[in-house]
Length: 255
Image (cartoon, rainbow, N blue to C red; front, side, top):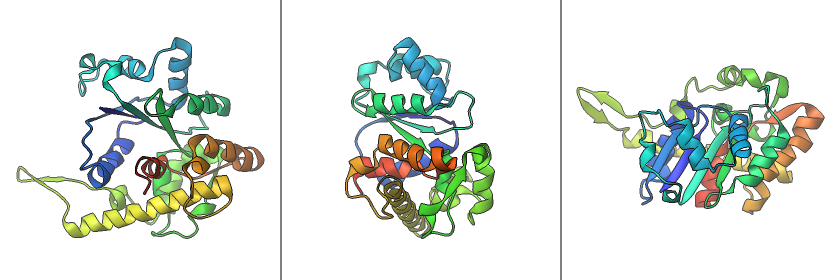
């Protein structure tokens, strides 16, 4: 059984449902998907102040949820744990040192869990011109503007919603209608572009090369944060825009 923990309740899970359909359809492991409903720095406090494991923290945080019966799960039920959170540098409790510690702790999905960070937040997936965008590797956002990034992404992108990368089922006359093959192929194609753009961007951040990385270690989550700090955050007071989902797909499937 695999546990996926997302920061938010809506956007991340909606996106992941599409990834499930595109990439996990034939995967045999059961997946439990939940939202922590708080940011990475709140999770930091819970983990390092209480000494609890991630499954226990999530169970405690979401014990009153009517979506999942957490009482029936034990820590040992989960063979893998993946976490997806935003950089959230505008938060009053934000700290790069805390984030470094979190990435060192959550560095293996079969042990403590594997953490993926979006810079500055999940909406980085939408910050693109019409796909494919040859300039994506160069896009940054000032640290001072990160709190407005949702609006910035909306203004920047020619896609006025997430439908260009979402598979939505439609209920009509009591029946569930799935996307037709033409739309399905269009979504697949757009995810290929998104995946390639973000992987090349991660490699550009870490290695200075705007191309698909040759080694997973080159674009590890810790290496991305290190280079974000050294090349963007400290010298330029900016953040290189990057979404975590394509990095997860690369490491999980190596595609």
